[in-house]
Length: 177
Figure 1 (tube, rainbow, N blue to C red):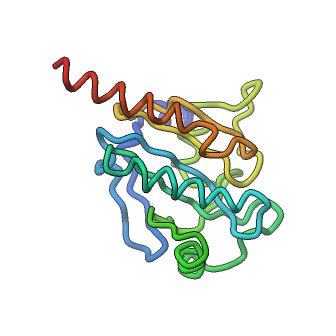
Figure 2 (cartoon, helix red, strand yellow):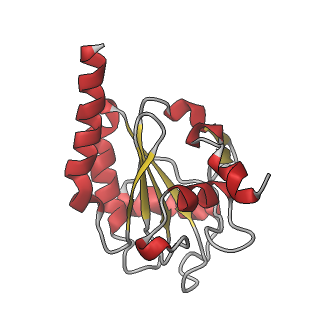
């Protein structure tokens, strides 16, 4: 089985990855939730997006929104700290309550498998599979489908309506069943 075929047989719920404290999070816990996965960096011009991500999380977490931030140092050496220090800074400077995951690579031969899965499931513009910069965002619906990919320049509040539609759609389906 080729690597591409193997990735295509996986679902988002097949992953178990460590957070900044090296405790593994089983993605099964995200079933029936809308999930935003974002690669982040503390020294980037897009770093203020942490504030908007937290706003979305605070507003919609009780309705089923989850956010996972994956620190990455591949773009301009803008995330040089350890995973634990990154988490501490995010909590202190941006009030982040959602999980900060273990620092990882999102491009190249040593990128984590989750990012290979995401990039294969939802390629970028013109089929480009790589991550272009920090704060590129993937959205997964409550059924586990990778349904959207937003460039770094698209802020979280820019797609808030889309998140609400996903949350509402899933709630409507529950009521109808």
